[in-house]
Length: 256
Image (cartoon, rainbow, N blue to C red; front, side, top):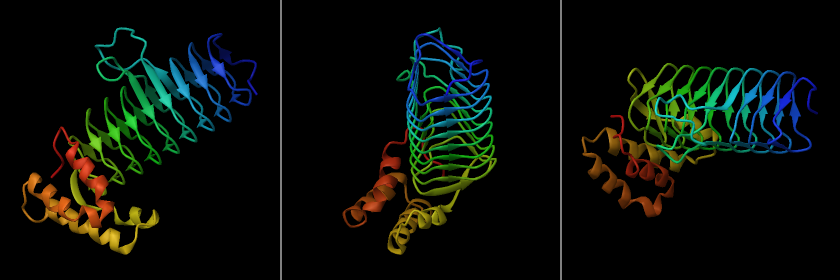
């Protein structure tokens, strides 16, 4: 299961059924879970923990030092969950001590070729990052986010659940859950209704999310006023909870 030309550190922990291709390098303090397949010419450095049933394609660089001038060889980490697909030439960095020291990738994500996930990012589950999408340091992506090709997200931004980011979009503020954004810089274009339909949101739920979006973007309300209006119907419209959470947790301000 491990090609004889692969270079494996003595301190690496590798499950018995892991596949490792030719000329791949597995560095110190790397832990790889069962069922994971790593193709040829991949470099994985540690401390890095990779879960089960991941597939990492050739020429990816996983767990190398963060691209941060403040980094001084501290023992930071990268944690990758289960069933992720990481395609060719992707780069994923470890964390820094300026944050929690850990870059985190969740489960069931599809990360296409040439994507970059910088230090201290927290990526949820069921994410799609199309070719060339880039996350700067400390970015948080909620569940089911789709980042279009060659989109870029500024450091410390938070992207709420079910957001759709158009190709070539530049994001420099937080994006509330369910929103569809595009442009340079990004502006809101409505809700990601097509994505919600694919995820079995009901017609009523999508209508309620649209109404909340109108409160936020079409009624001329201050952000605090819009939050108060959405809170009034939350007990009967629980699908609005991710939207409220993304609004309450915003530190950079939301795109408007």
